[in-house]
Length: 292
Image 1 (cartoon, one colour):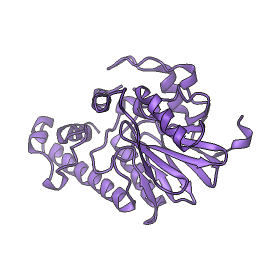
Image 2 (cartoon, rainbow, N blue to C red):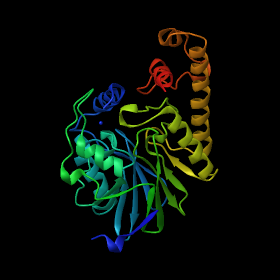
Image 3 (cartoon, rainbow, N blue to C red):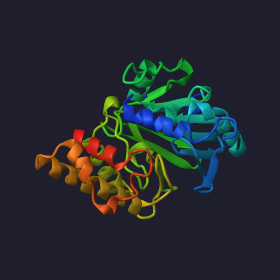
């Protein structure tokens, strides 16, 4: 992995469109403000629309992981202003607009992401929904392959790439010694996740990545999901167990000769009721697993 010292540095598928629609209608631009949850003395979570945002405060300023929708850029600037000065570093966990929308407004910061994030932002998307290429100021300044490390404030911030998972550019960010992890969209806490094959994601890669993350954290780790409430390793284990169990159920139905429509009509075990309460309902989750 590459190491970056602060001193040396002066979207796609139809289901994803549904996520954007869900979140974009949740709050009006004019009255939205981010909620704040203090994780540690130096780490805060901003939430309320789009992906959860981690803010690390140090003597050097702020380091921000993800940044929500473009339409909430002013609200983000206001929230960051209450925590300190403009951020020195911005990390993107992946390229989706509910996590990178404020990249341009934070373009005075050093933006860091996996190389596939820069490529997808720069290219945009033609189908199934047109997404314009991002402005040059919104593109990551520093990219990596397997991961990178930033020494910032009192924390070692380690960004680890998990390939072909939610997308092909996913990063999970570990803060030590705070023992905090930002999962990006490698975790939707208590909900069926969205997996984006049009951006290089896969059910197999997603499942494998969550298993690897479980091996890396312990019972004292504070887990910040991409969407949902702050949790711990037990919550990640529950999320993983859901993926494995529902994958097996769908595979069993497919192997038995059922059609997708028949599998959706039959549904999953009652154990997973409530997991479809975000934007990926049970029928959509079955279709994701079926295709995967």
